[in-house]
Image 1: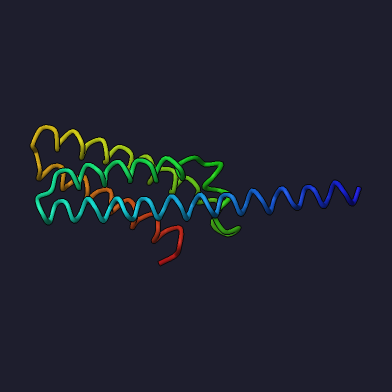
Image 2 (image 1 turned 90 degrees about the horizontal axis):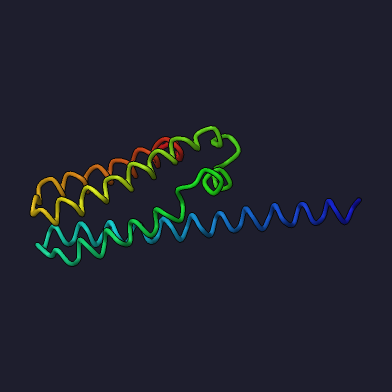
Amino acid sequence: MKVINILAATMLTISMASAEDIMKKSMSIMENGMTQIQQGFLNNNLELIKSGSKLVKEGNALFSEKEVIVQYLPKNKKHMVNVAENAAKRIDLDVNVLELNLDSKAYINAANAYSDMLNACARCHSIVRSW
């Protein structure tokens, strides 16, 4: 019985550490992507915006499923998993809108999509992290 409890505790620890690693990697990739997008807009560099949007997509895909998100959230915030999941969906949609507007040369609309992505990030962070 002790062996089963030890194995269960080990698996729980590993899954929590894995979720933490996924979260950190996701947030780091998304931060780099958001920075590239902003620099691209500031410097009229479409390639930088496009490479940044790819990074945001990649990072967002890592940390957008409820099962992963809930493992990361503190015990008293687990009920907020829907907030984080909805932010991930909103970011995914905004990246697509940004890219479509870039292709259409609708740069103001693309910048608005970037702004909405940033708002989705800030909203999730403020609610889940109690800013």
